[in-house]
Every structure is written in structure tokens, then in C-alpha cells.
Amino acid sequence: MRISLNEKDKSDKGIEQEFKIEFIMEGMSWRLFLLSLVLLEGSTQDFGQTQFICTSVPKDMDLCAATMQNSGPAEDLKTTVMQLRETVLQQKEIIMNQKETIRELTSKLTRCESQSLPEPGVGGRRKEPGSKNTMGDVSRGPSDTLAQLGQTLQTLKQRLENLEQYSRINSTAQTNSLKDLLQNKIDDMEKQVLSRVNTLEEGKTGQRNETDQRNRVESTLTSIHHRITDLEKSPKGNRPLDKFQLNFPLRTNYMYAKVKKSLPEMYAFTLCMWIKSSASPGVGTPFSYAVPGQANELVLIEWGNNPMEILINDKVAKLPFQINDDKWHHICVTWTTRDGVWEAFQDGVLRGNGENLAPYHPIKPDGVLVLGQEQDSLGGGFDATQAFVGELANFNVWDRKLSTGEIYNLATCNNRAQVGSVFAWSEAKIEVFGGTTKWPFEPCRQLN
Image 1 (cartoon, rainbow, N blue to C red):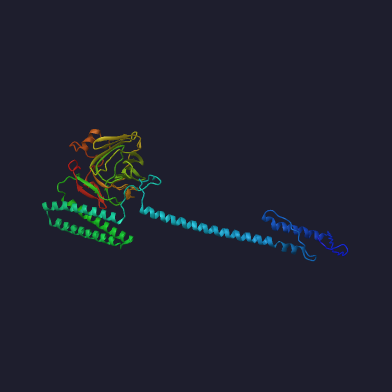
Image 2: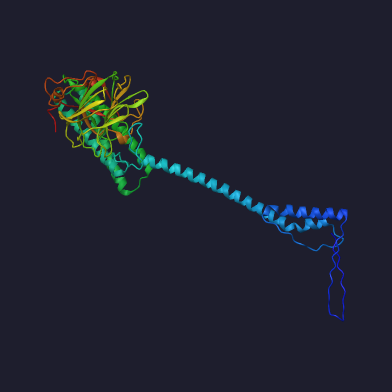
């Protein structure tokens, strides 16, 4: 297309403009015209609705060059859009990196909180969301730590006094020498506690020093416990092996006792014990029996504000026991695999019963029987929040259901009372760990 402009000035009629538009359709010019339209349409098709703009072009200028020159603003706009897109992608990458950082920090914070505030749970059982730690775990605060150390030292002193009374009757050079050594260690421990109090009052300690010192103190106390236990074993004399009790003074994950042999396969059982505790809420786990593949094969536990429960193959029944009054109580639980029928006795009286507790599931053999801790794995996986706090004695197990009369005889210390057919309470059959202690005990003589 070629546009020519002729102008004439007519002075007698004013200024008059005459436009003559002449279209010369020639072969090459027509092709260039179509090419220019295609280029204009291609340069604007990415930006939504298009429009044609008529622009004057010098007669001798190449139409292709003019078209490319006029498409400059569209190219600039396209470049700007690409730059904005690049910026958006960069911002998106930055946001993803920040999210990853936030996720990592949140994970670290969760681990810290879980270490400082462990939640209670039972073996493989699911914990309720939002549940709080109501087991009264060992506090790591300075004042609570000192109170626990003071309680432990008082316990050691009492045991030493018992040894002194015995040594006055049956004194030997070895007993006196060992007693003096232990007394000196306890005196040293009291000095450390006193020094600890002064240091805390001055506020000069840090958390790391506190943790290291607490670990050293606990290690020393455990060593003293073992020495006193060895000393107490020697003067047994003619005392029967079943006249003893286990003492679990603190809620820890390392104090426990273990029965040396496993339970057999059982289609019915009766388990009984003397128990004393003042822990609240929840006395913890008096015993747990785990087998390969099932940590909760047979468990007696009271945690948090829940009532005491018995678990068989991870199935649960709530027991109507009330025992955390710091008094001795005799408790028994019977169970048969047929229909899962169970009964619960406290102080010789039937307190509750039920059925459908793991019916037709025999208690499996080849397991580990632990006193004082709940097992999350075979022989281990202890959690301080589930530990038993108190005293326990005369734990016996039968592979049959005892009658009401037989259970009453046990609770009243009748001469006709029987010992367990599967496991009978005896010092020779139990190992103690972590500072768990053995004291002389005779049921019905020193109750409450």
C-alpha cells in the first residue's frame, strides 16, 4: 500500500486540504502488506484483545523495517512480563526455603519440649491428644531434686540404723568396717547437698553444671544402695527367703526388679501381692510381663487420673482398686481365657468383675517379668512417668483361678494360705537394679 498526499492552497476560498488516497495494488506491495499484518498480530496475540493502529510511513521506507520498529512497545511489555515472572519464581523459592527453616525449628522445639515434659503412655497404646503429664514425674527443678536427695539419704540412714542394731547383737569387724565406710559416704553426700543448697541460693550455677552434678549424685547414691544391699544380705541368718519387701522410693526409669525366669503358657491365672503407696495421681506399674512381639502381654498399671487397669494382650479392663493411701493392701486378680472372665479382690473382698478380657488368648511363655516398671520393649523401654513408687511384697502367681476362700486366707495371713504355683515370692528368684532395695517384711505383723 502506498499513500500519497497532494495539497493545494486556495487563497480566494481559504485554506482547503484535499487528501487523495491512492492504493496501488502491486504483487510485491500486497505481499508486504499481508506480512505486516501477520507480524502485528503475532506481536500482540499474547496480551489478550488486540487492536490495529494506523501509522503513517514514509514513502521510501521498507514496510518490514517499519513494522518491526512499531512493534517495539509490545516487545518491551513482553520483556517486562518475563522479568516479573522471574521475580515471582525467585520469591516463591525464598518462601519455600523459609518454610523449610520454620519446619526444622519447629521440629527442634518439639524435641526439646518432649524431653522436658514427657507425656504419659502405656506401651504401644495410643496416647490421647492434648493429654497432660499427670503422673508426677521426677522434677528436674533444684528444689525438687534436693528434696528427693534428702528423702533418699533419710532412707539410707534408716537402713544403716537397722544394720547398727543388728551389729550390736552380732558384731563383726567386717560389718563394722563396712558400716563406717558407708556412714562416711553418707556424710559426704550430706555435705554435697548442703553445698548445693548454698550454691543455689547464690545463683551461680548453670543448667549444664546442675545436670552433671545431679548425675554424679545419682551414681553415688546407686553405689551406696548396692553396698548397703550387700551388707543386708549377709545378716539374714535363718530368716525365710519370702519375708522381704521391695522398696521403690523414687519415680525413675532405672529402679526395678526382675524375676529370673519366665512365666509359662497359661489359660488361667491368679496373681496376688501386698502393696503400699502414697503416690498421687497414679501409683505407676507394680509389674509388667512382655513377650516377643507384645510388650503388653500382662500388665498392672495405674497412671494419671485413670483407675488401675490390667492389660492382657493389650486389651484393657479397669479395676476398682483404691490403694494410694500409704497403707498396706492385699490385692488379687483372677482371669480365665474362656470368655475372658476376670475378678478383682482388695483386702480379701471381691470389689469387681467382668468378662470379654482377651478371651481365648492364652498368656504366652518365654517373656520377661519386671516389677516396678512398664516395658515398651522386651525387658526395657522404661518410662519414668509409668514407674511404680511405693513398697511391694509377696507377689505370687498361680496358673489357675483361686477360690474366694483361698484369696481370703492370703489376705488374712491364714496358715492355710498357699504360695504361687507358677511363681512363689523368694529373694533367690528376684534381681534388683538401680537402687531398688529389699527390706525385711512379714505380712499382717507390720501392716499400717
